[in-house]
Every structure is written in structure tokens, then in C-alpha cells.
Figure 1 (tube, rainbow, N blue to C red):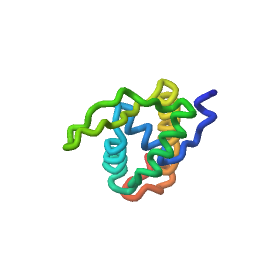
Figure 2: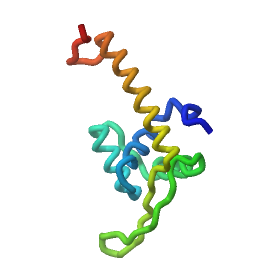
Figure 3: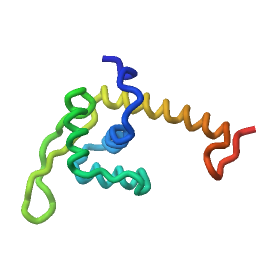
Amino acid sequence: MDPSDLLPLNPRDFLILFALADEERHGYGIVRDVERESRGQVRLDPANLYRSIRRMISTGLVEEAERRPATTAGGERRRYYRITQFGREVVKREATRLAQLTAAARARSLIPGEEAPA
């Protein structure tokens, strides 16, 4: 499959892949990163997160990593996820696509607080 076949990505999927781009994370870690990177504008509930992760595993964007013990009381084991090389290529292409759209919006003075380049 060509990475471009999956574009444009659902914004939630983009943010999940973005969260996994620099390190493996467990579900709650992904939720926290998405909320931080979106400045609180996107909040993932567990059902949607795991539904998205299952779909991204089936399309080869994400894979389950080694389970690790939780550091919290109870010692449950958490599932960790990592982005695949294919997933990395897809998220890079989506980031490029979004950057191009942002440049076009900036050129039309559609981003508040930013002037169009001269």
C-alpha cells in the first residue's frame, strides 16, 4: 500500500501517530500527549483511542510493543504501542500536507494574529 492512499488522515489518527513518533507509549500516555499537543482541544476517550489503535494496527501504521509493568499501585501491566516505519511515512506525508494547507491559509490571512508574507 502506498502511504498516500491513507491521506488525508483522520485528525484523531494523525494525533495518535504524532504522539507515537518519538517514543512508545501506553494508552494513557497517548491520551495525555494528544491533549497536550492539541492544547486541550482534543480529548480522546478510551473507547475511541483503542478502536483507532486496533484499526491502525490492522493497516500496519502501529504495532504493539513489549508490555511493561505499571508504576502505579496494583502492578497491572500496560500495553505499549509504537509507530511502524510505514506509519512514520504516512504521518510525515500528512504533516507535509497540513503544512502546505497552513501556508495557503497564512497567504490568505486566515490565521488570526499572523500577517500574510509580503
